[in-house]
Amino acid sequence: MQRRVTIASAVGLHARPASLLSQAAGAQPVAVRIAKVTDGVAGEPVDAASVLGLMTLNAQHGDEVELSAQGDTAESVLDELVSMLSRDLDNEPVNA
View (cartoon, rainbow, N blue to C red):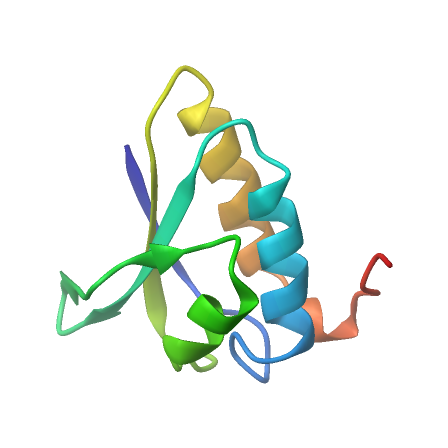
């Protein structure tokens, strides 16, 4: 299952937004992958639970990404993560 979303965070998937997304993805019961979309085509996916992986995507504000997951809970997991990426995560606190 896949979902596409445009990155809303002003700084893209850098530092704080990457940390928040990786924490949320890592807490899910299914593995989540994420890829940057260029010219309508998803690139090589990385583990969404990896801050380093997220930062290597170089996904900037306004870029489109594709999230993917498999399993019984994939739909609700992807809905939650798409909702996160639709907000400016740079202004949200990081859980310690």
